[in-house]
Image 1: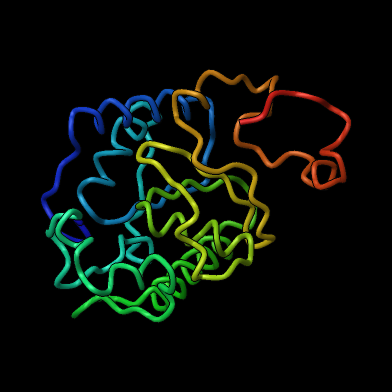
Image 2: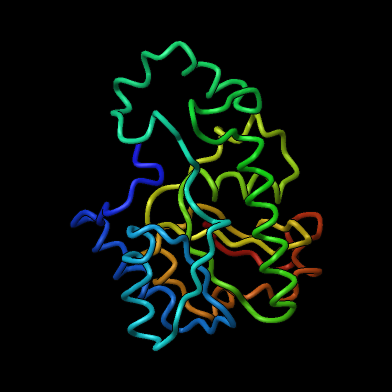
Amino acid sequence: MAGRIGNIALSKLGLKQAHQIAGALAQESFSKIYVSPLQRCAETIEPFLMKSRKKAIKEPLFLEMDYGKWSGRKLSELRREKHWKSIQSEPSRFTFPSGESFVAAERRIKRGLNKVARSNPKGKVLVVSHGDPIKIAVQLALKGDLDSFQRIVIDPGSVTIIDWPSGTLIGANIPAKSLGSRTKKQDGGLSKRMLSNRRVLGGGTNVSTRI
């Protein structure tokens, strides 16, 4: 449970995924790039920044959750904690010892999304964050119950696409290598083109394989 512990670098697999992300996003143009201040997030987006010659803005609102005294402990050990079941079934009632509550994290992520949307009313924005914050962002987009957010899966090195503040979930947990293999002719890249035409019964007139 890394949490907000500093000086945690990417593994070899993580570095490989970072380069896959750089390749997948190579054709995309972002008005701004926001990144969690933690080292592993900076390393994740570094290959893309070098390739695109862009700079990222550190945004603390997209930090990993503060797991407090649970930070740095092994998941196999934490699963034996009496509160582990509560985290899975009723996270809205749980606050990590000397750390953050899920309710506070949800408010923080919502503030971050609103801040980014206000600052960038047009164009695409890239946010580089962590598993739980991204899961919470998806749950917010779908206006779901916080107690159900653990049912959302977000893998390392994946891409999630949300139109905010409309809350339209365009794609979630897309492996970067899969995204990179899709052409703009197939799905318009990461664009939200013709969202009004895509929010229809039956999914619209075009039939295609979806991720």
